[in-house]
Structures are given as structure tokens and as C-alpha cells.
Amino acid sequence: MTATSASNLDLAAALAEAEQHYRAANPKSLTQHRLACAAMPGGNTRASIHVDPFPLTIVRGEGARLVDLDGHEYTDFLSEFTAGIYGHSHPSIRRAIEEALAGGINFGAVSEIEARFAAALCARFPSLELVRFTNSGTEANLMALSAARAITGRSKILVFGGGYHGGVFYFRGQGSAVNAPFDYLVGRYNDLAAIEALVRPHRHELAAILVEPMQGTTGCIPAERPFLAGLRGLADETGAVLIFDEVMTSRLAPGGLQEALGILPDLTTLGKYLGGGMSFGAFGGRGELMARFDPRRKDAFQHAGTFNNNLLTMNAGYVGLTEVYTPPRARALNQWGEDLRERLNAIARRTGLAMQFTGRGSMMSVHMTDRPIRSEEDAARGNAGLRDLFWFDLLAAGIWFAKRGMFALSIALDEADADQLATAVEEFAALRAPLFAQAAAV
Ligand SMILES: Cc1ncc(COP(=O)(O)O)c(C=O)c1O
Image (tube, rainbow, N blue to C red):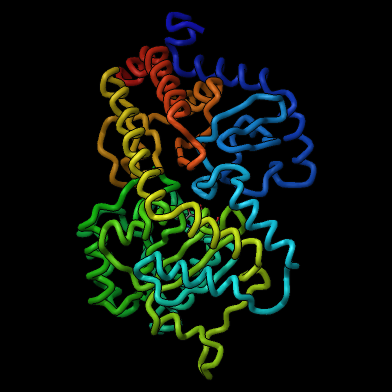
């Protein structure tokens, strides 16, 4: 298609054409999707990876490459929504898993590996004095919130619109009917005055404040430092437990965003890449809070989980954190991400399109608006049709990222991959400029 073709003058027509191309290019993925629908609702077991008209089935990954069922190759700029920081089948991670396998798995006992890994996490993340493992970030948040309620004897939990903390902690849009049934106050992100007003009548009922230091799922929206500092103050004043959900953001600096911003929560939840690519979650923080989980105590909180200390995760996570994603590597990846995001934003500025890449370090999201983005409401002002078109166009150019606009970098990507992405964004900007003009005129 050329910039002058009729469908490029109308967004609906351009989207229809892009979708048609997608369908034609991916017949095997469509067949596989239909097969999967027979046994899973919508052929899906994880809502975040469903896309319309149907998802592509990936059959193989290596380094920063993915291959789908129809044989197309993609450069992986999604990195499993931040969990795949090591790229596919990193040799050190493979070795760690093979080592663990060779020694037998699932002992029904404590092992040395989990203690080593726990110590490495506590050494790395400044607010972690003691830590416990779970199987997912969702479960880590469930445990942290339940502990905060039990410790404070209070019921209310302050969360933020656009926040995502797992399958049962979804606060985007209207929220979710299957959220964990806690008593939530939902406040506006990056708006401290509104939060103080919201909390005022409930000061003595507030058990916890749960916040992502940068909202990931809703479009890589960084929390402003004064906002997080204000939440720290609010927790101190009210006696609520401040929980940073660093399931995604822990990758953004050697000690997570808490270290980068110099604000320490009472509890932190972790997940994603920290398990080396295996199922993983963790919650930890101040010693006197976490000590409530000490089973030697008479009043200990109950916390169990068959796979909490599974050896594949424990060893892959430990080796990944201490041998691969070391502090210098974390700094380098995030600086590279800063440079790449600035390069893409420069394209948007040069072409004058209402498009921007928000985020920090190795995480970013595209938004089809040039207005500042500080909250879910701001992000919702972006043009969703143009964003979908951007996804179809970049996918056709061999770039793999989330349809909702999210990119996460892995250490397997290199400068040639960055050039590929920048070129695809340049081509999109040149080709689709008439549609931006049309959207602006509406
Ligand atoms: C900020 C945040 N918290 C929690 C979770 C849930 O983690 P998991 O998918 O491991 O349950 C996610 C997942 O995307 C997340 O982004």
C-alpha cells in the first residue's frame, strides 16, 4: 500500500485493510486459534495475550527472535511483558535449570538454593529485609495485602485507577467483576491532592496503599516522585502499610524504582524476570512485618504453596540475578532504553505526529496523542484506532510487541534491532501521516 492509496485517507478503511492482510498472512494461526477455542474460552488462558481478530501462535524463540506457526520471524520487543529480560534460552539460565533438574526436583523440603536466592534479593532491593516466595506476582500481592490487613486490623485498601496488580487486582476502566473482594478505595494516579481528599474520611480504616511506581499495563506511566513521596507520608500519618508493586519496575534500576527514586515502601512485591523465566513471585520488606510469617511464632500468619520454593525457579532466578542481570547490566539496559525511547520520540517530533513513547529505561508504551500522560484518563485520550494500525504495521515489519502499545527490552536485543524498530516507526509515520491529519481534524 502507498501513502496515496484511498484506504490511507480513512482510518477505518486502513484498519480493515491491515486486518485483512493479517488474516491472509496467518492462516495456520487462525486454524490453531479455532482449535484452541474448543477447550479454552476464547482459545485463551491469559486475557492479556488475546488480540483481535485472533492471536498469532508462536512456535519458537531464540535470543531476541520469535517464529510463528506460519513461519514469520519477529524481533521480540515485548520480552514476555518484562518477564523475558534474558531473551530466549539464555545459556546461563539453561545451565541453571539443567543443574537444578539434574539434582532432582520437588523435594517437599527446604533447600540451600532458596536461601541463597532470598539473600541475593534482600541484598539487591533496599526495602527487603526478609522475603517470601510465591508462584506469581498476583499471589505476592494477595499475600502482601492480606498481611497488611491482618497486621493493621483494618480493611480498606487504596489502589489507583489504571493499576494492574494481577488477574484479581485489575483497576483499569471499570475494574473487574472477579477482583479479589477487598474493600478498595480507587484514587487518581499522580494526583496527591485528590488522594488526600479521598482518604481523609477513612484515615483510621486504611490498611494498605498498593501502587506501581510506574503503571506498566496502562501505558508505562511513571509516578512522579512527589506523588510517591506523598504516599509515603500518607502511610506514615495514617499507619497504613505502603506496598510498592515492583513486579515490572524492579528491572528499571539495580534495586528497582524504590532505589532509583530513593523512596522505600514497607512491603514490596516482585515477579516476572526475577524467576529467570520460570513461574515466580515474591513479597518482602520490613523485618518486623515479615517476621509475622515466622512459623516458629505462636501467632504466625499462615503462608504455604507447594511450588513456592521450586528449584527450577530458585536456581534460574538466582543465576539470572547474580550472574547475568548484574547491577552494571541493569544500568546499561536501562540507559539503552532511555536512548531508544528518545530516538523514537524524536521521530514523532520531527514528523509532527500526535504520537509519543512514554516510560522509563527498558519499558515503554506508544500513545497516539501528544498531550502529557500522567494518568489512565490521559492515556485514554490517545487514538486507539491509530494505535491498532501501528501494531498491524509494525508486526508486518517484523516487530513483536503488545497490541495495547507496550514494549519491554531484553538483553538479547542489539543496535541492529533498535535500527529495525526505528525504521519501522519512521515508515509508519511517513505512510500514515494523512490519517493523523484526518484524526486531528475530527
Ligand atoms: C505490576 C504488576 N503486578 C502484578 C502482576 C501479576 O503478576 P503475575 O502475572 O505473575 O501474576 C503483573 C503482571 O503483569 C504486573 O504487571
